[in-house]
Amino acid sequence: MLDLRIRKMELSDIEKIDKAFTNQGWEKRTDVLTNYLTEQAEGKREVLIAAENEEVVGYLTILPLAKEGPFKNKFPEIVDFNVFTAFQNRGVGRSLLSVAEARVMNETNILTLGVGLHSGYGVAQRLYVKMGYCPDGSGVWYNDKLLKQGESCTNGDNLVLYLMKQLDE
Image 1 (cartoon, helix red, strand yellow):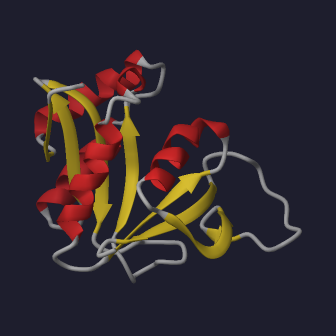
Image 2 (image 1 turned 90 degrees about the vertical axis):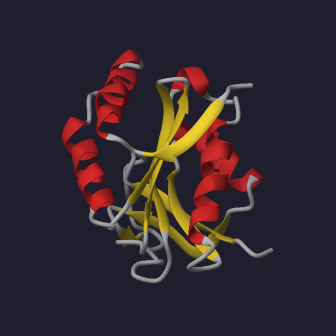
């Protein structure tokens, strides 16, 4: 088990997250992460960092209100949730989600998120179900629009199922 500390994002985390992305063969996200830090300072987003000692092992962001999907402008939403591959299946994701849930409980009893449907999201899909997140019943969304029955799509990052959790149960 890791000796985790969950805290808000700091400027020095941007370089650490970019390095972790590079180490697992992904592109750096310096501009996106810098924007997240700015939005956090403005109260538009909270960025939670999971760190072991000084190493960032995962993060997630919380929007006060969803910007798209079936929960748009209704409930808070977890967006951009990553636990780096070397630290998966060690309780990092569960810890981050638990802290996120505690953070929003003062404002609402519902927390939402969208999860991709391809196999790359398999670990996340299982975690969300184990932690009590359920589909909202609207169906599958593609490119930020409800995918109607019979419509075609590509099974990539833009094919999403939205989930919600009632926090007071």
